[in-house]
Length: 84
Image 1: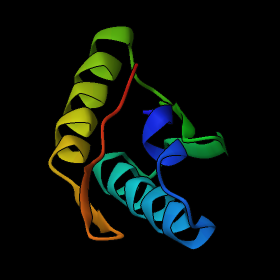
Image 2: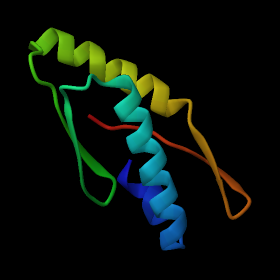
Image 3: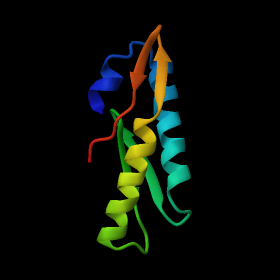
Image 4: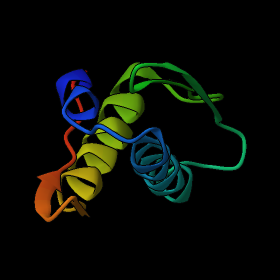
């Protein structure tokens, strides 16, 4: 979610969160898929050779994995979430 990154003061901490989330997405996607980071916590994932129903299942899987990711920043626990 976009507002999660707003609450993190240091750019280096925001970069760690973005990098970790992108690694999670990459691990849950196929090699033929394309992942891009736009800005402000916005990712773009293009599913090649995937119909709409398969893409919905893939996104749900990614959302579940990311939602189990927690970050400790400045002594506070932050839980990552994905909006679709």
